[in-house]
Length: 77
Image (cartoon, rainbow, N blue to C red; front, side, top):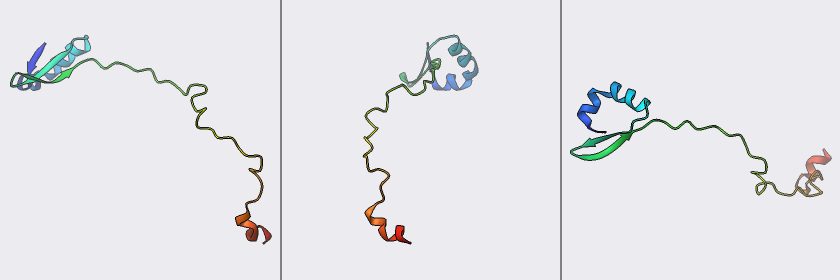
């Protein structure tokens, strides 16, 4: 269905009822389609996928817990 902007503004509630039933409505301005009303597609939220961060993890070096050379003076106090 195509409808002009002025008419769409005046009949928005009834248009939304039609959209809820699955109808797609095209809104026109001066004969040119400028928008469409359509039902929202409900998306299913997905949690993280196993292995999705495998390229983000770096290998931890063996000396990870060793004191840093930059902090030698601090560590002596």
